[in-house]
Image: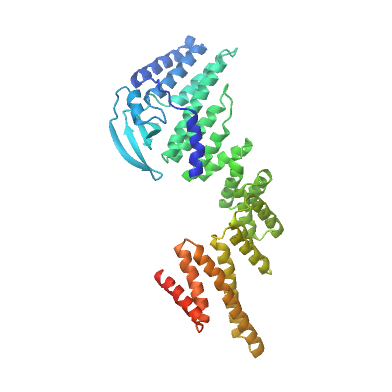
Length: 439
């Protein structure tokens, strides 16, 4: 969520609400009605000016209800800008875990976080759908502008509407109304394509899909992500490919899912979300291990300090037939070299040794030949002892109490085998106490 908030907040920083706004909503509504009446007059309707005035009237109506506040203003600054207008009520709330103060005015709510105005939400519009109707009016004006004399003015008006939709979409997102946010981003994208502005906002298309995804509307999200591909827009590091792959997998289309990942890898070979998706695919489906290790090598080159990639390699090598135990241990050991506090490399090695010791023990229980039996017992003891060291390393570095308790269970069981040795008896008691405290 944090990454998304930052990405969207950049949009909000581009445009702030105009501090010189029409304050009288009723007056604004009357101006809209007058402009609409003119547009219904057959003679006046043929004039471009009539529609320009109607578009502006709708914009004024939109602005009128939001007051004189602007995003980023402090409460003290607003006291001056609002010309003595006081909120009807004030309440404290929490949004995304962040405490916020809401000032309720007659036609809009002001949301404050950290002492600054963060969002403005219209609660009582002066007229119905002012921005949407403004777009229609300006589009009509453009169609009547045969010589394109007002093309620049109309384009600027549409750009202004686009920014207002974008800001409102960000506000809705910040207040966790993801359905509304998606609809507003969709509107912003539509305006950006309207002539004569005609500057497709692919970021708005992506955000419409992203907020739909967060809202749980996968079908809607899919449609916007597919549009992103049509527009050759792929998100941050090919994120669109990764999300469409996830959607295809949810729909049961594994072939399409991996195709999205492979296509994304061609265009964004450094994208970790795509690489990890491919690694997961090849791991679970038993695909070409050569291809899988190629992808792992690319991932390591991109993130040489990411110990988890070596842990993944170790796990994969142990799943191969036959298991590549030596190379798997090298990968697990590499985890500790990269990050001594990364517990999973130690755990991976310890679990394999422990499980292998159990397998040897079981095999020994069925062995009738004394020499072979003794050899198996020696192997069992050697392997079980070897498991203790990586487990203890993991126990000492992990910060997760549940993981510690699980590891302690392994060490306790291993040490019990060698309890005749006072050193192992002491270790057994130590980890038995940890296990007991965790239950």
